Image 1 (cartoon, rainbow, N blue to C red):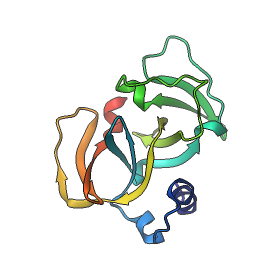
Image 2: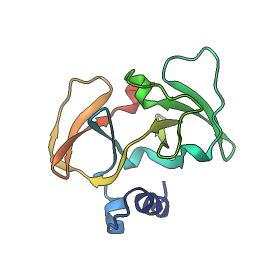
Image 3: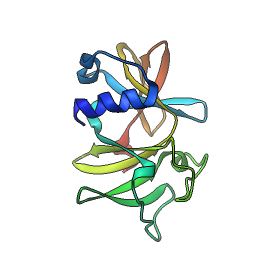
Image 4: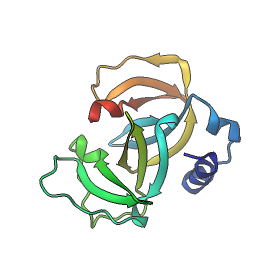
Length: 159
């Protein structure tokens, strides 16, 4: 994802202004939460962030729980995974209120996948010295930022 897109995304989400160096930082993560748990995705894995309301998702019959459908991103067909349905807390339907949801397009082992998330907290810089292992199979580590721990998603484990 280009740094200009990060900058615009951060301003849209939180209104906070951060130094552009934060965006290029290798320790940068996109933080979000649902069900009282904070999660993050490494900025290095993110290709783009798209507003859910701005795309048309086509459902795909006979897919696994958590696969919302596919959408066209400038000629590329991107599958969309519903993060909340993966944890079976609340499955998003295509008619759900879309205003605050985002699709984070990530590169996982050379494949682009969209991850539907809500509750975006913004971009944060993690303190690598306080990183802890986790036994959660969908998360690679617990990372520390801004006074709390976030579960860093292991997107390769999902696929």
